[in-house]
Length: 310
Image: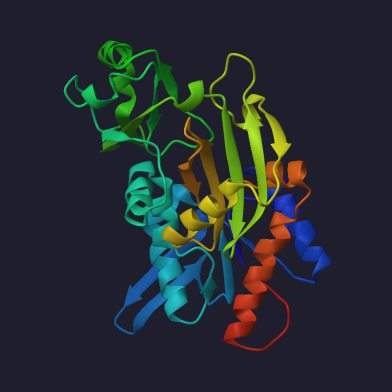
């Protein structure tokens, strides 16, 4: 069973379907908002559209907005014997940049110098003041959204004072502020505009590419016009990406990395729900197939049977 919305980032779903077809696997789509948990004296049931369900293998994508229901349901099904790739707590933790950096630092995986905060201050930003440029990122931002670059920490503080901090409220509906977003600030390594994207599955870097941002852009996302180049698997970024996924306890996912002036490869981001259509097209690697092969391997390790992912 794939817990996702097929119409969100459709190209990734298309690749999963093609990989499944060549392997004789049947994929079933469930939409996250249609999950329920039934709690009663007789026990707890995970349901889909009111029907008690016990899926065998579960892949989850495009579920980041539904942590409150997705995590309990997936944990319940795991306790009943389901195989869930990317444990939900680990997946959601990777969506928070600060929690990711803390995890990577404990595992001694190289990261970029980072300051995390709800609101910046001159005192807090002092340790980045000597850098020529700094980059500000929302902790839960994806695909380069909400990122801003400043020529100095002074510029960042001035912009925040003017209007940037007003965006820190994450609304619930349109009435109640549910939570304040927190942010991370980092030096703009190498002037920005170039990074490395890796995709790791089951402890192996299956695809690796470098991305060069469009002229005048510091974000190297393919959706923003970056030019990609395939990198060999021997590139040092591959081993760093594998170490990052292992530290974050993820079965598969994307890793963004950057090489600093000293040649050290450092992790910028880990994403359990990273898209793989772009890197598959650039590298020619069957990332979707690698994910499905992992699912089958886990299933066969648990019990013998046919090749159906339901």
